[in-house]
Image (cartoon, rainbow, N blue to C red; front, side, top):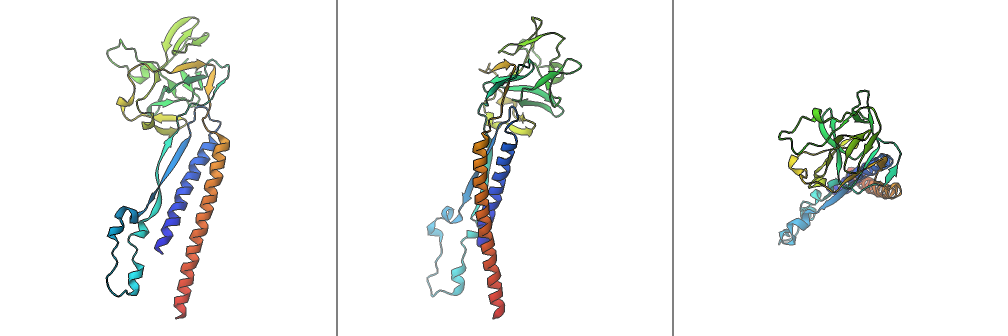
Length: 270
């Protein structure tokens, strides 16, 4: 039955939406997490072709003339795309000197086993070598000095601090016992939606030209963490609506299946 594809495609799309909403809810308490949205597109072949393309036979109609689909089986609901909401989360004080929050559109630049990545998750701590790392072991990088004609390797920009009291200014300058040690790299992008999630609150930027060359307006707050921008109540409400919609589509699929089974049984009687 060709019409079965319409509710089936809708059910598949709603399942995708449920997965996205469930992931948002699961990360409602993850610092720096940015929630995702999913959008749908209804593909209606008849509307794309236009009414003038419908071929009605100018003759005495035969039974098969009533079964022309006009590509109706290609009418479906599909996922048009998903995007990340980069709205600022709440900034909560922690009084931990190595908890850092970014106020603005900037990202921390960190070195991972897969290369440079960007994150809003500002949970850092010094390891045994004094290197500032995330709770996953990714290393925080310093800003490239403008007077340096050659860009250093990422490994050479890993921030290593001596023992002492660390103070970090809103501009990202790191002072230990009132001595300037380095400056944290804060990166902003021309098109923030070009970033792609990679897990563990990390983002990858595939085009180096997307990085802003001019100084951004972002600033660092020491002793704060940016919370997830997920509203749990709103996401749960959307999840319940999506689940009800999914159940309705399941009932429609079951109805089509019953109709098909009944038709087979009726034909067998003849």
